[in-house]
Length: 429
Image 1 (cartoon, rainbow, N blue to C red):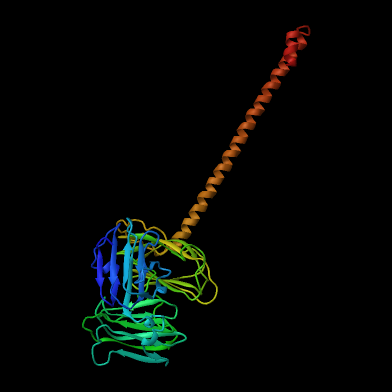
Image 2 (tube, helix red, strand yellow; image 1 turned 180 degrees about the vertical axis):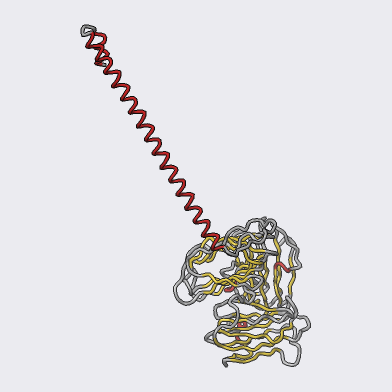
């Protein structure tokens, strides 16, 4: 690790882009997780260029694992001490990775049921969770709850107060999606696919008031663009592409995926593919002003400009599947496309107002004038053709008359001079 090692305690958060370890392209950064038992991981974000940027975990037994987005959520427990090493290449294409870790016995491993750490299993169709009650939560806290629901768990937040980026509440829903909350801002209401597991971690510092929410079990409530802060891609890059599913093939049933593109002014979108189960598998796009567009089926959408920031959410049912979607985006200071996909033209000075009164009568008069002009033009053409025919006929008739008169004259001369062969030849000719 070339001496660039950040020594961490027995529990905490690793957030690469918010780390106080300086980094740059073609760099290597390391973290050492102090634990004499087992390190338990909850991955809240894994989004980096797996082909060139590498993240490795080495456990206390010397076993090294390469972490990718596909396997991160399956890496839950490693023998401590654990060394994390991230290596970046020369391209600025990595977004971030985040995780929460704690140190404890092996059986506490976060297998989705929180092991023996579950404080309560809520099975009622509605309820409320307040933690802690009447006091601040302790340092090095590690608590779990579970809400059992066959449909969606709709959560309405009442209070939230934790140490930002240090103490964290992590949700894992029935689809395996992970979302995390930290800080003092009260989160927006969310709908999570049941069954839902909650896990709360705190570091060794002084605790705060904690959190409180109520829940109901039933149909999904709220905007289809609510993504719980859990994004496949969350980027502020000036341009890029989204190809889902990556590498071709078909998407899966019962998916719920989100992407967020953050631009200062506008997000200009060019579609390359849309192939979903029409009316059932939906791509919902919501821009910064809350304007929502729902896309489905196989008809290629028009190019469009949305007000940044823009969130895209793709949800599928349990029926058929298809190829998914592809798009390219660029950030811009001006709107590149309007709602019809046509590139807007630069606006000039305002035009004078147009008087539209009597427009129907005006149109009728224009039609009559056009017909009159056409009739006059056609008459002129016919007249010209007739005159031309008469002139040509007169010329040919005069030519024939002249020829006959000349012929008769030659014949008369030949009769007077029957032995003049020259005149006879002329007559014949």
